[in-house]
Structure formats: structure tokens, C-alpha cells
Length: 90
Image (tube, rainbow, N blue to C red; front, side, top):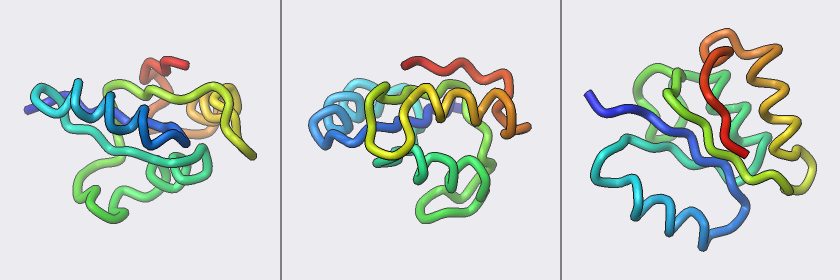
């Protein structure tokens, strides 16, 4: 089974680059904002996500409108049981 990565960024260029880099070896889910990421983390069935909402790694942009990467990392650590110990790369 492939490891799962959540990629959170508001830049289509970053999505394209990371998707190309990870597509062969990992399953990944993308979110365009911190708010979208929270929805994914809270809801095990959203869009094309048809399995658990647990991830092996979360990669997030630091500077995003409304909810920053710091805010998202804080949410994961303090309020998201499924991913509390998941590494978050900012």
C-alpha cells in the first residue's frame, strides 16, 4: 500500500510540481487552502478521497490567505486525532 500525502497550497504551479514528483510512489490528496485541508481531515469521504482521512505526511504552504500553514499545523496537532502525530512540513 502506498503512503498517503496531503498537499496544501494555493499555487497551481506547486500542485503540478509536487504531483509530478509524488505520483509514481505515493497516493496524494490536494487542498487549495487551509480551510479545504481541514474539511479533508475532518471528512473521510470527500470528492475523490474514498478512504480514511489519515495521512502519512502533510505538506503545506506557509503563507496562504485566511488560514496559514502554521494555523493548519496547529489544528492538526491540537484538534485532529487521526493525524495528531503526522509529520507536517511547512
